Image 1 (spheres, chains in turn red, orange):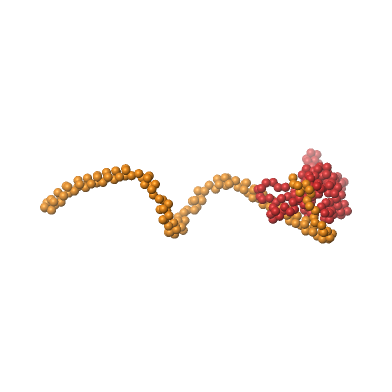
Image 2 (cartoon, chains in turn green, orange):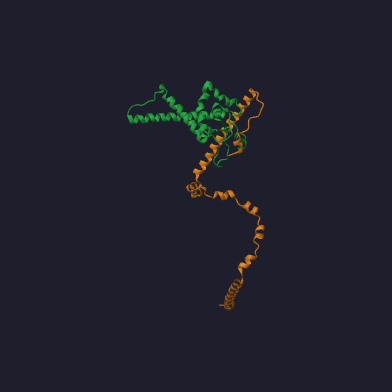
Length: 161
Length: 148
C-alpha cells in the first residue's frame, strides 16, 4: 500500500463497512465509559452513605441515562471534530453535503435523528447501501455526508488527517 | 725484543696519531656537510607520489596473514573498553523505539483503513449490479475537491 494508492479514496463518500466498523468501535467505547461511570458513581455513593448502592435496571433510568450519554457522545464528537473515535480510527469524517465542515446545529440534528435510523430493522441505514452518496436517514435530515478523510503518510512525516 | 718487534713498535708510533687525526678530520667534514644541507628542501624535492605509485600494495597485502593478525587481537578486551552505557545514552534509544513503534502503528492503521475502504468498494459494486446502476460513482463534494 502506498500514499498514491490511498489518494483515490480521499474525499469520496465512505461505504457501509467503514461506517459500520467505526460505529462498533464507538458503541464499545461509549458503553465501556458509561459502565465505568455508573460503577464509579455507585462506589462514590457507597463510600459517602455507607450503604450498598446499585442501579435498578428495570425502571428505565439507566436506559434513559445511556440514551442521553450516547446522544452527547455522538453529538459532541460530530460537532467539535466532525468525527467520533471510531471514525478517526477508520479515517472517515462527517461533512456537509457540499464538503464544508459540519456545524454544531447540523451535528445536533444528526445526533437526534440517528436513533430513528434504527427503527424498522434499521431501515434508515439502507441509504448507506443504496443511496448514491451513501447517505443514511440521519444524513438526509442533517444535510451531511460521510467521506474518507485520511492520507497514508510515511513514518515521522507529521500529523495525518 | 727482536728487530721485528722493534719495527712494529716504531710503526705503531706513527700510525696511531695519523688514525686519530683522520678520525677528527672525517667528523669535522661530516659536521660541515650536514650543517650545509637544507633537509627541508631535500624532502620537498622528493616525489612521494611517484614512490608510492611504485609500491605494489596488493603484493604487500598478500604477504599479510590477516588471520594471524586477528588472532592476536583480544576482542573481549576491546569490547570491554567500549562504553556501551554512554553510547546508549547518546543514541536516545527511547526516541528511536518510540519513532519506530509509532511508525509501525501508523502503517497498521493505514492498512486497516485501506482494506476497509476496499471492502466498501466491493459492496458498492454488488449493490450497483443488483440495482442495475450504470452511471459512475458521484465525485467528492465540491469543498473537498477544492481542498482546505
